[in-house]
Image 1: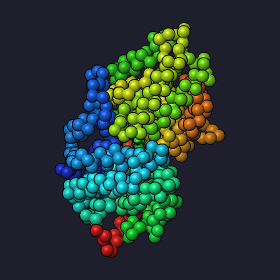
Image 2 (image 1 turned 180 degrees about the vertical axis):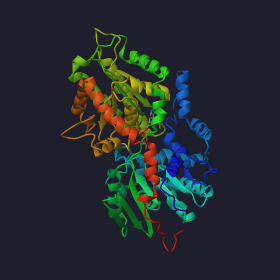
Image 3 (image 1 turned 90 degrees about the vertical axis):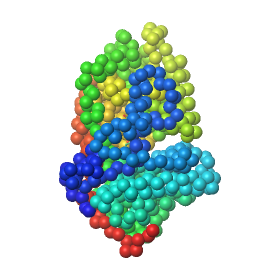
Length: 512
Ligand code: GDG
């Protein structure tokens, strides 16, 4: 039943081994929810993509693309069919209208319909029903020795449901987003908040991206779940909570990327060609020697700080007019979740600001120059890597982000690049903890402590633009080496390593 901590076991997670595993190693089943994590532009993207490449990018990122791709491998995906009515309030409603903004501590984006307790309760029932469907499906399809690994905020109750169906199951949970509910969350949305806390504690183990998130979770457990006992060993960083007779281990595991998925493109002649074409397209045929190519790519989401970046970029040209006619920001903001009102409003506002920037700043000596290339269609992976290689400086400045993989992808592909990174990103916390940013010493990237502080943000653009190529190379190489060493395999083996978990303790009387 208990899995051994060895490398073969670890590999299992990342290769998603089939039921017919010939080595007889324990199976690890990844809940279908993983699909959510990979599907980017799934809803409301305009149907007519402009060209074949964009269509290909969209296809790769669509649910069908993900399923096709995965089912080609050696394991099977098992779709869970959800009633359309339930799906809408479960996904657009509770998951992305309430939990997503709340857990990012951005309460201003919680949809206002949840001020009405009846609506909240109805929608929450749909969330419970959908979680039930996933839990039931996972239990039906698992075998006694399986370890079930659930991912993310859409499925926080599945552990509790599965335990009530089969108390012997071991079910782990990883939260990809921050855990930072606002102070009044439990007063305003208690009918969601309390079951969420209790539900999370019914997993065998729960992983967070950062200590910041685990600490907040423990603070809330102390405050709201009377009778819970917290055990923490500061030497091993192992922590567990016992509540209502169940014990759950809580760990911190900064997620990362599969390096080869990106590195395999880096040296291809097609990628180099794309990179050169893109650089010409963005900076023009005859850019100034010190012209800088800034690059950002993300889902078009208010957590990512796109609006604040645009406002600061505008200020950058006001403050440093000598940069007009030289630098260009290429922003890819992939349209998504437009069925949620808050997303639509935010996206429209950003597009308006972007258009104004391009109208406002012109250069008479260089009339074809535009300060901003703003694109809402996603890029195929090969073009994404080409853009990482073409850029001089990557910009990743979310207001809050569980981790942010883009920062890691940029530096894995391009160790010569500069980086502007905000403290809202889990990756920034990970880099600081690893000593890659020292307040009084070596700073390997330009840090934004407050994305709303326009002046400091504009100054960071300037500092990054003026950083010498040699300095960029030194800093980029350090980040590159750290990210390469701490890849996704390391993350999954760390999560699955049984040594950080408690011995499973079952309550004598099982609640059903
Ligand atoms: C959640 C958490 C956490 C983006 N645009 C394109 C494209 N992408 C790819 C990136 C990257 C992924 O999407 C985005 O990952 P992030 O980590 O940046 O952000 P979320 O989507 O919000 O993910 C986050 C993550 O889960 C993992 O735990 O880090 O905090 O919010 O891989 O490359 N890919 C392609 N074209 C695009 O235009 N091909």
